[in-house]
Image 1 (cartoon, rainbow, N blue to C red):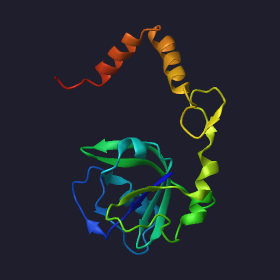
Image 2: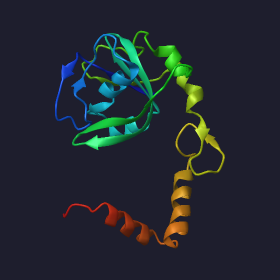
Image 3: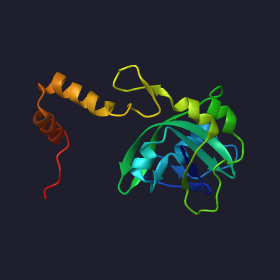
Length: 176
């Protein structure tokens, strides 16, 4: 699955949380300009958007940028995609740049999720725990906890409480 962001018309802005001075699309915008305009900030389902590895930025009915998503940042009740645009030679870039929006629909929502046939083989990668197993997710099933437990042993002497206290000291929670 990929997330597709549909840009509206160009607008100058100020005080943007991402430091941009415009949003929307304009004729002849570069792929980098399209990515900066399209990466945020949007109302998105956090868990769904965080699970996506690729993003398409579309405007004027065609794909203006294709990017690899590396994470999300939250800005109030909205989110921005973090990542980098893909370049010529990458299968998704070559399949979609300048072509009609493959996830076009009648929705007024700028954010859409959908499958791209070319992304299937690109989703397979090594498990992030370092076991060498391949998976279409960050971790093979159950290996996320394996990685956390390994780090608790390595950095916190096996104490989950020490990990929780460390996290709480770095990210204090609001008073209840």
